[in-house]
Amino acid sequence: LFYSGDFATRWQTGNWSTFHSWLYIVSDLLIWSAYFAIPLIIIRFITGRKSPVAFNNIYFLFAAFILSCGFTQLVDAAIFWNPLYRLSALVKFFTAVISWVTVFALIKVLPKAFSFKTAGELQAEIDLRLKAEKELEHKNKQLSDAEKIAKLGYGQWDIENDRIALSDEACNIYGIAKGAEFSFAALIDTIHPEDREKVKNMVNKIITTRHFEEFSFRITPGGLVKHLRVNGEIRYNGKGDIVMMIGTLQDVTERHHSLHRIEQQNNVLLEIASIHSHNVRGPLATIMGLASMFNQKDVTDPDNVLIIEGIKVASENLDKIVTDIVQKSWNVELMRQQEKLASEIEA
Image 1: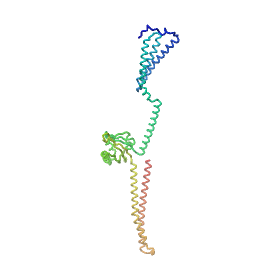
Image 2: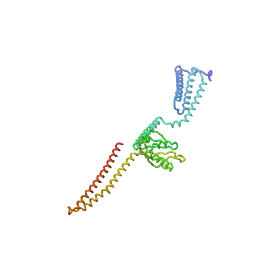
Image 3: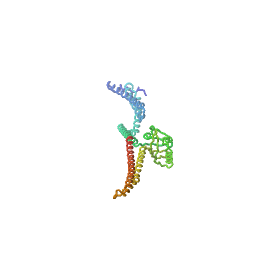
């Protein structure tokens, strides 16, 4: 392979000038050095990355192909002094094999490589995703604000694992840390003692009938009494067994108090109406009856004195009734003013 006795050096073949020969040699050496450096850079790029590189084998084939091409240039430059044509032929053959292996490998991976997105397309996709994330974040903020305004939260009960998870606003309603999870028994402990059995019975009824009915109960976070309204749905597994309950819970304390105040006002108004329809009519009928009995022809009639005295008594009774109606009407107005003031303080 390294025998060169039957060949002449390149210096001895042809009419080489000093300039042309050294230009040839230096060019071969420069090509070889570059072809030697490029594979090192490629291998360093592959092995130096933390994440895997796509088409790893292609990179190694390129490195082998370029290195073998560079070696042919080195042997070609050495032939000026040592005619190693046999070695040169073997190196060229090895380079040819590596070259065609690389060609076939490229043909195989080319369709997949073409399917990859360009840097511009990837950036456009990233920008689109960032925009979508911002829009989603904005919508989540709007949803969170709506939940706070409506005092509406979300909860789910994993029945199999007995784990209850609440949304942030639901945690605010309960007065507990965000992200807290607890069991059904722990949830019952947060309920007003008078409503605990009611809630247990309602949950058992929902599980038995497989129908979620809306219901209300009271909780006592920090010693305060809150009225909650719960509505939800049931979730089943593939076998048809109940595995989860999900639903919303709303703080309706303010609404409950408003309804209570309205009920009080209605009771007072009904009482006023009752006084007006019954008590007022009695004295008024008495006055009218006595007035009709008054003897206008003979003012000195002794019965007129009795009639006037009766009218006076009936008038005093009527005055008391009117005063009572006015007082009760004022109480209604006072309740309305108190309700208005309470609403302004809450706002």
